[in-house]
Image 1 (spheres, rainbow, N blue to C red):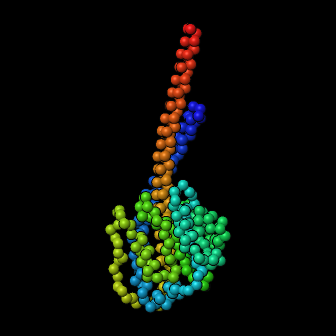
Image 2: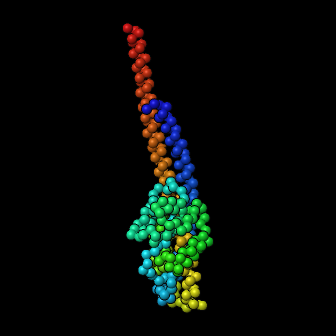
Image 3: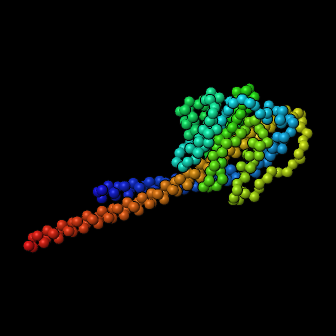
Length: 303
């Protein structure tokens, strides 16, 4: 390999290292911001969902249309991915988990609600019905958008268009661990709510201390009527759960991207070091060859 070519590769690798380092720094800042937002919302989400977890075993909850199990096979699946790549296996893990959930289901029984371009593109190319596609570019998640989406899903569930509503997203555990997770939103059940509440609490770190749900009375008197209150309460808290899932997904995205860019930066430094070593070897060989030719020519003239 010519010295000029090796030098060009070294310069290109150094430029790539500069870019990945900058992206790593930006992702680190965004990661800390989204982590703080997700962690700050966990206490509220836990308290809000615990209200339904205590109501889930009541007769009113079991008899309510939004809490009754169905035997149908029609699924509305919310797939939360990112709009951008360069985040390691984050999006592929979520998509793989979604595909596993759809095994054995006919495409006509599945309706996809895609939050993020990666998930939308994947399922659209495979012929699934994309009922609604939402961009996932902004870091500040709008609660109103989640409420609007849940209102649409609730209407579809009550009309019989969907027999079950679930969401697949990346659950944030730590900077280096993001777990593809599937949660059921409708119909609401005690077990599904307990999974969401337990998944909110991190295993380690500053917010790992609170593991339970706030204590409260086990019986309630509901006015004006249980059906009327639950018809408002269930969609509202389902929107809170979906909102928190999106926050977790955002924190996971920036964490995964920061780690991926750090690995890319480390690898580019390693490649630069290897190419520099090759460059020095080739240059030394060229110098040795030239010196040998000069010495050989001089000896030939002397003889």
